[in-house]
Length: 106
Image 1 (cartoon, rainbow, N blue to C red):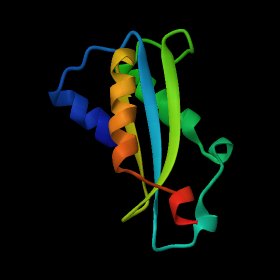
Image 2 (image 1 turned 45 degrees about the vertical axis):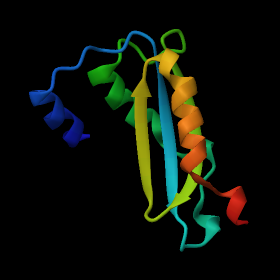
Image 3 (image 1 turned 90 degrees about the horizontal axis):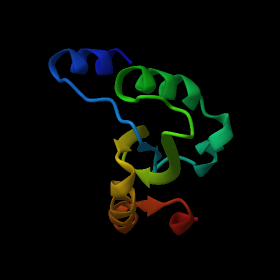
Image 4 (image 1 turned 180 degrees about the horizontal axis):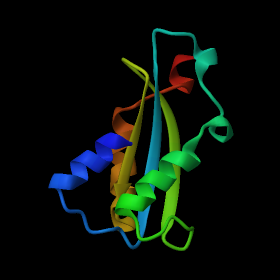
C-alpha cells in the first residue's frame, strides 16, 4: 500500500490501541452477482498486516475487532474504515441506512 505510506509522510497518526476495522466490499451493480466472493476467499491478511504496521498498536483480537460487509455500488472497490470501538455502533447504523445490499437486488 504505497499510498498509505506516502500519506503518512505528511500526516502523523497516533496508532490505535483498540479499534474496529471495517472491510466493505463494493461490487459494481451492473455486473453479474456471481462475481461476489466469499469472505474466506479474500486476501485480507496482507492488507491487515500493512495497516497494522502503520496505524495499529497490534492487530490481535485483544486490540482489534473486525467487521465485513458486502454491498452493491457504481464501481468495484474495497473501503477500509478504522475507528475507535466506541464509534462503531453509530458508524454501522449510518452505513446501513445508505447502502444497497446484495439481498435487496436478488
